[in-house]
Each structure stands twice: as structure tokens, then as C-alpha cells.
Image (cartoon, rainbow, N blue to C red; front, side, top):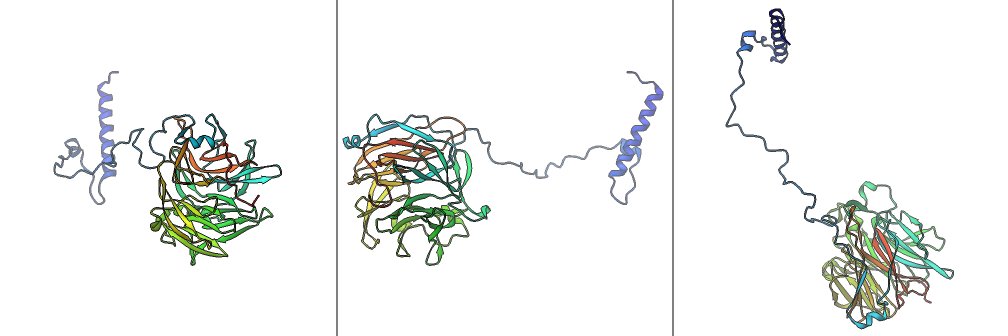
Length: 413
């Protein structure tokens, strides 16, 4: 397109006017607008070479898609593996058939933990806690799952300050629900309501909830975790920091330690604190003859203590160490100890009453995204004959038929 002299002159005039208007709008208050000649001869200011430059907005190194694991849930999924068992002693074959198969009940849970078998007629069902869903579920023998008890871990309304943060695969989540459940000698459910800081009991009417203990010397429990009830009704339980939103850093923390407690005759007694135990407690179980108390001490260590008739503890020490220890513990009728490794790859350790390692059960893993949270957090013995091992495996639940029966809490048979 060509412009004649008239058009060029007009455009030049418009440009000059436009610059003058823009400059007038940008001028400082009280100053005259710059002249056309000054605008025509204006140049950019010289660069201030000595002027310090502002730091970049982000100074952290770039994060790749497969960053190294920093905490639980980071890193790639664990390598895929099928269900398997490892025999370390011939006696392991007396507990589980070598060709036993693992059955998946359901893998749509939040995070399952402790469970207990409840007889009903000629059969029964398992009640299992879900730490994310704040409830207990009923699992029937045909694997049907239904809601059993809601708001079982936290009954309040201030959800902004309840539930410690955890991971479910890569997902950030809050542990707001109960963490273990058992039965007392009268057949009533007793459980740990971690975020209520209480040991609770469901009465025979199926609706009334009774607080059995919620403090030690007037100070709130940090977060009751696991428990076992002796045949005389005495309750042994572990208390950790998972009942507080910020864990041990929580301003709501009243007890300076985690510990192992006894509830007997409406009195709470501290049996061991974390320093005496040698690590933070978690799983707890009593021997078949009720002479010993088994306790996890941190990760991979199991301790055993003598239990006196009044419920206090006598001499104790290291009982076993290695994978498959760190979370729940249960005992079968022959005195063998079945323990779980917690949030790791999913291992169940089986020990003889003298501490000899009999075998290991390895939970299957799936190498895929979204990353799964399949592990071994706790076990319970179910079915009318007590010969089915129900495995609380995070977002999944499995069952495995055994050749031996486990101890089922509740009224003596």
C-alpha cells in the first residue's frame, strides 16, 4: 500500500499528538508536559551496571517426575510381586498349607487397621476399622461390606484440627478414624478412638458408647492406637501421637511421652513410656497363657515382658527383630505370634512361642499408577473355627485359610 504526501503528513501529525497525550498522562504532578522536540530527541536511560539484580522467584532445583523418596508415599510404586510365603522352619507347614491361596475381600477401603471376629448364630462377621473413613465396617463371610459404626475415631465437629496427616499412596490424607478394635469377656466391642483420645466400649444395646478412659492423671491421651483385653477384663493399650493433627508438635499435646497403659478397676496405670520401651509403641498382644505381653518398639523390634497378676509388668527384653514387625500383633491358640510390618511392602512374620522365626507371608504388590497403598497393618483370626487369617492391608483386605486356629477375643468358649 502506497501513501501520498497528504496521508503521510496527516499520520505524522496524529503520531505526534498521540505521543504528546501519552507523555502528558505519564508526567509527574506539577510538571509541564514535554515538548515535541524533546520527545523526538529522547533516548533510553543508560543501564545501571552496578545496580544489584533481584533474585529469581524460584531458587530450588527442578523436581523431576521420579524424585527420590523423601517420605512415605514418595517415589515410584514398589516392584510388582505376587502373593508368596517363605518357610524358615518345617513347623510353618503345620500352620499354613504350602499351596494356600490368598483371597482379596475388597480394595476400596480408605486405610484398614485392626479388626475382630464377632460370632452371630452359626457364623459371624469381622468388624474392621477404617482410619480415613472415621468408621468401622462389617465384613461378612461372603465378602459383603457394610457400615457398622460411624464417627468411631472422632466424634467432634472441629475437623480442621483433628486427624494427623498421612499418605495413602501419593494422596495426602488425614487419620481421623479409630485404629483398633477387640472384644471384652462379655462380648462387647472395645476400641481405640484415637482423635477423641479415648478407649471406648459399645454396650450390648448396640448404640450406647461408654468412655472407659480418656486421660492419665488428668492429661489427655495423645492417641490410643492398639489394645488387647485380658480374660479378667483388664485392658492393655498403646498411646501414640496419631490422635493429634500435628503429632508430637501439636499445641494440644498434654502428655510428654508415648506409652503403654493399663486400665483396670477404673484406674489408669502407665506401664512403660517410649524411653523405657526403647522406641515408640504400636502393636500389642498378650500370650495365650496370659503370662507375657508382646509390644513393638519402633520399627522392626518386638519386646516381651512378664505380666504380673495385678497387670503391671515384670522383666522384659528383645524378643525378635527384623521385617514383619512394627504394627499389629496377634497370637494363635498354640502360642505362635503373628505380627505385621506396617506401612512397608506388606510382610507378616510368624514366630514360635520361643521366638524362633517360622515363616513370612508376603502381600502382593501392583506396580502401577495411581500408586496403591497395599501393605500389612494388622491381622485377626476369624470364621467360626478361627482358622481364617483376615489381613488389614491399607486400602485392601485379604483373607487366608490356616491349618491352626487363632485366639478370638470375647467370652470364653
